[in-house]
Length: 192
Image (tube, rainbow, N blue to C red; front, side, top):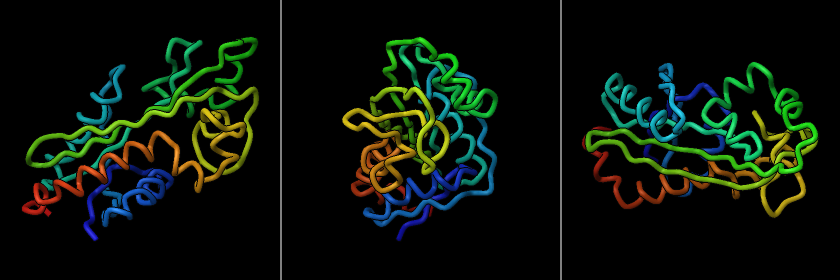
């Protein structure tokens, strides 16, 4: 099992990532390092910047993930500001913004950045869906109780981790990382 540092303080993200990566013999271990976030409208820039800084500090390959909820009727808001929006106005604040809005389409996007001596690799995952009219379910975290993935009638929080980890944005991004590592792990070996 290859272990890589993961810059996050969110145990849910660690669990979701490792549920996917364990199939590839990879385990992400939370690193005791604060994630530095660049202010940008692009998740790719935010994740890559944080991964490069973490790599410079740890001097070994490191993984960073950044994600956001993009609501079409709100011009992609909260997008890369999802964590801040969740902490400040929460689920109910977003639902309030959506009151009376017919177009409830949205997408979750995750960007995983792997920084190593060879540079930074970026892996993205997107899941399309819609915003529920009320928060539903107790599993999951963040905006999971208000996001209904395409092809389902229940929110991520109602579906639970078993289903979410098969169809989510984060699962898709970490699946791509796992596939890349499967074919390129030798690029990391000198630093591990």
